Image (cartoon, rainbow, N blue to C red; front, side, top):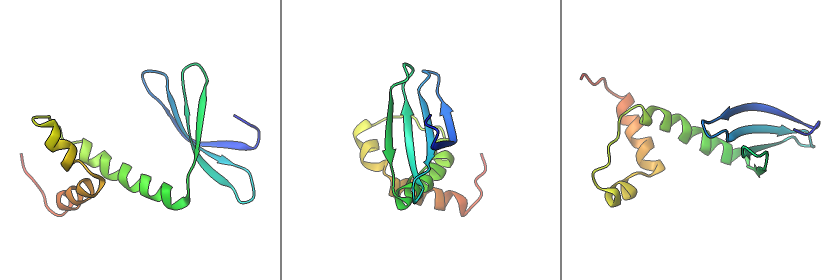
Length: 101
């Protein structure tokens, strides 16, 4: 990491790939997503604040959605149905009531 950066959050997966959110000290401060491969190769993506908001909202919804065990029976149909909008709608529905198993 460069001296004009700070890591806000990072997560390393089982394959040793690291996903980080970085603040770069420029004027104004820039925020970026960094992917680091196990060999140290990095890719940076500078995102707009609106982009971070969209990613964040979807990640929050996806966290709740992924708690449900989803088993594939029709890949084509699942590809058509599994969209950010449908995930958000499902989470709104899920949060509006209590379900008993």
